[in-house]
Length: 554
Image 1 (cartoon, rainbow, N blue to C red):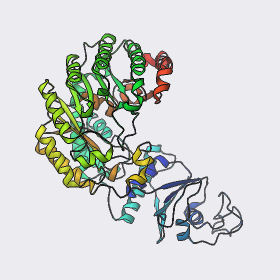
Image 2: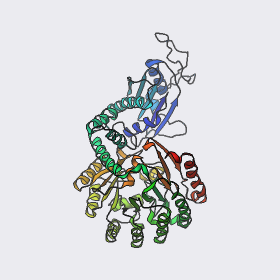
Image 3: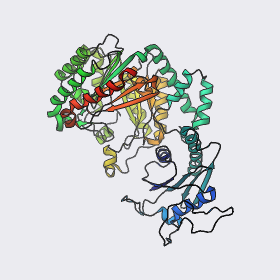
Image 4: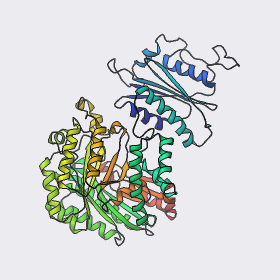
């Protein structure tokens, strides 16, 4: 159990992911306290009081030199001092109903305090205190500037305590290339950007290199696209043959929810018809059909869906149509012919791993041989831009397993390879039923990522988009690779948030982009399948209402 004590300004969303990156797999409890004023000595005493649960009351302690009372402005504790030591406090059961055990003691307590005059933060574990002050910027400064000074100090303190650095330094955001791209577009040289990333975020050279490579490709794609005059559409099919243990997306096993596919498709086509005229001043540039697994629909249903899209949208400016076929156990020759007939130039066939034991363990009901057979079938039917996904960090896998998967993907030679690092989401079975997967953690995920990078470079794949997720294994990243000229345009647009994306279907989130990406507003659809079907008019009305109010500004 790790306790984080926050006093003053609320930086929980920044602090917690960074501490979690140093202590993966630990459970957290965040305690927030109000506190005002006092100086460093009072801050230190307050942190000690929180951790040792000593009595601290405003006005009850002797004044410090200069007249400052060490408890001034603090919330009172019990009138009876608790006898436990700070080390014992670290091992106490969590508050607010959370549970821990003697076998799982608190690894770290982080007491973090902010106040108007100075900055102070402290880390305490059973072996004692480490404390640090941060200066050079006023709390009245811009929040981002103040946050970065604070986060650098916290990062260095944690790195010293844990004896290791993180490859992305103190960066915890999901789009690390965004700042790189913006700075390149503003005219900074690669070396200036490199120095900024080292100084501001403490990034490793390896991650700066991949960020610069990705941003350079994104810049070329965006310049060629005239993205400001266009928009994109995402159509979600939330059905799957089965739900994988790591998946947190809206995903409904077709064996259980199959009777709702027709009703869902009818509701979805209503939303598509509305969306076709929702942005009359812009041109549709990319269309992405994802999920779930779109090919859980029948060939006839896929045909109706794609026909509806063709009839609803003006496709004269369309640059890319992608169908994420996904699972090989849902793909047939008939479905691929339908997709091909409607002009889809890009599809995905996603193995995730080429190790059969892992496929069985994570809930994918297909074989390694089916992956190969489906890929070759797609090639035979004329698909010449195929993406394959793989995931690093799957249960029980080793770097050698990843090397074997890469070798087998190399034999098929897809145009795109997307390398994901496992991220444990709260809604995924891996989290909700984690007792079933105890002791099955993968080995050395950083080495797996290194192998994938080497494979990509040796096989003429170049990184073109990159993003990160919360709770990602070893604080790493997802990277999309492609052969030159075969990049997925939609992937760049959604990662860099430069273009409005109308998102249709259950659980889909539309992103309206204003001012070239400086402002973004979301309009969400409900996730529940039955709610979406029954409330489709409301889903349409949400977008319509937003556009009536703000559409002229897009």
